[in-house]
Length: 206
Length: 206
Image 1 (tube, helix red, strand yellow):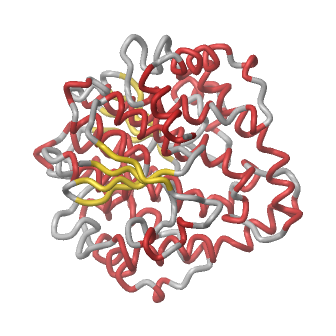
Image 2 (cartoon, chains in turn green, brown):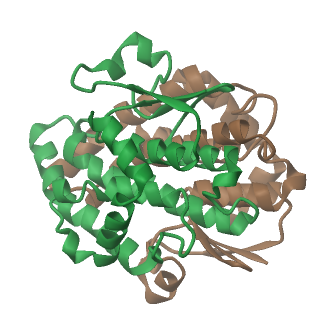
């Protein structure tokens, strides 16, 4: 059985929702960032990066949201969470998720995790100041060029959808008014109504 | 025929090498960052992100190195550039590439592209100061926990190898002494000897 290590309010929610969508048998393990559990030897033995998510499978441990989402899609093909039979369409899915991971999430991380890239407190504050602009530019691109609707890839729900939903939940915290991006906002609302999404969120906040 | 848009000394080299390894029919188009060609309307029509690489295929345009590398591996299965038949092993490949993309490359980018995340010149300088430490921590993890040897995934050469090679070329520029990481250094040397790698680099520097 798959075991998902997560912390509340993190990108781990994307994989959690995907496991629900796949009707996978899985269990979750909550890691408390407040108690710095992600830096304790027990967790570092699972994920030496000291981050979430991590997923223990019967074959070994996986990290990195885009890789975990693709693994879930490929391991549960009957759930049709990605266009697995067409390398180009699959690459489009992966490109979207890679953008979320390496550009959108990274821009967001400059608000709470600036210490990764700078020591000077004044520079951390300067980073935080630019987050509404840098994250806003990402959502502008997603709104104009990437989100096809009703789902990210168009008519078919894919592993892009829980990932976009997860990151789009952070907009207000990043100082962005969701009404600037009606397609992203509507997608978020559409996702919020899914039973799988409600179940994953309820469990994480329980 | 595939057309790869690249700029010299960027992560586009990874896809360029992979196309060589796949014996794909392809052409390259050089984008000059010095002339800011990546921000001109002609290029933004291809990649609205204004970055490289971008790859025009007969089915459409792809961006994002991890997605492009997986596409190359899946489109040219005879080249055996990824364990395509095993979702777990494929996910391990993807997790490694995702780490390079979203953590290692991002840490590196704080030296030359700090303006993405901050406006204040003093903060940009403060960011640059931490790059040897933040990028060094990434290579330390790769050295200790991720690079199996002789190739990233062990005995089989995969799409992880050109990507690690590409980013490891930036170490000295990031203020890191490669002798601290002998496995990464040896991997870089091993890659440098491949005819495919020499051909791709020669073309980009011609």
